[in-house]
Image (cartoon, rainbow, N blue to C red; front, side, top):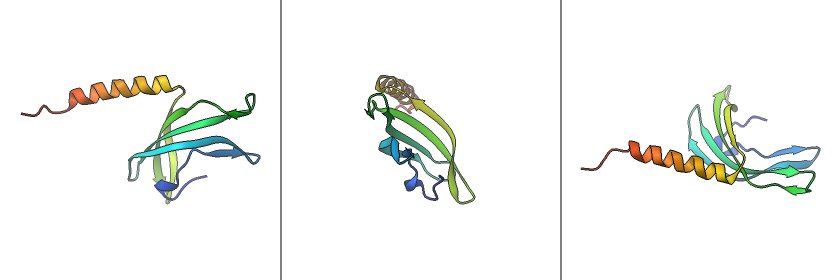
Length: 101
């Protein structure tokens, strides 16, 4: 299902009336014709009969014919990986900032 509004985009998903992906948080990183969103979510485990550990996804959308459609995504399966990626990006980004005089 495609969304007409950025704020309505979600990763939540149901199969046969059972929620299998539960969105826990969403951040809009960029807006416009090519918005970027980051989601925190959990997937339903049939074996455990419960939602599993948190996962994360970064998704880039494109507005086409009035609706936002996913163009690319990068999934992060473990909180430790998310922390490591964030630390590396922070290090790189802060080293690229202009130095104050």
